[in-house]
Length: 270
Image 1 (tube, one colour):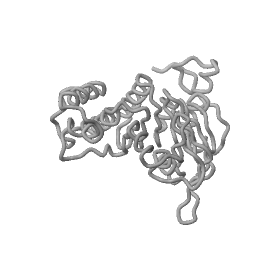
Image 2: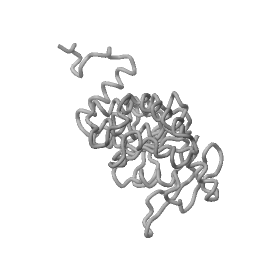
Image 3: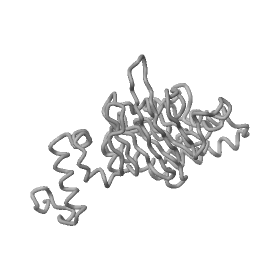
Image 4: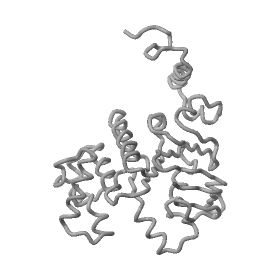
């Protein structure tokens, strides 16, 4: 579990994050959403220690990360996996070498142990027999799955995903969402996802933190978000007429008033 307590962060006198608190539970997909410039990335960087908050506290499983010395933070970071927005794979390294990189950095395992672990996580993300391929030979979705494999190769307790569906088509995005949820549940990880993808919000949002101009405007889950009356959140999530109508339809379905499968006109689809 990760706790964020009253975090504030400013740059050059401009406050970017102001008094944000949240509890991100283990075994859940915890999403941070908001418009560009709302502070999502800054908050995530504060949580992982890339930025130092001006005030407030970050706790990992009840222990204050904010108060830790460098050596203690290093131990926590060994338990963190990162999936970067662009995949951040090394172009000159094979898939196997990319995934093995953290093992080379942080373990004293022999080559067989490392190879076995790499094969295990590649199989988990459905990339068997891709070991010797280079990133240039992979599709966008495959690159993201390699990134996920690398993020979990150290068997982390915490997984951070920065825009995991960026640049992917809708169908591939759903595959990545499903994989992130499965891994979160199977390995009992505390997963934190920074996203603009509203499909992700609705599919895997066990906990959703909505930031507006650096402040916590709303929190809840993917069921509660359908019924929210928060205007700022509704304007952000359901901005188009189509999504607004979809929200209305889902609300009716959740209340049991409209059988699933009917369109907005109340007629059976062809």
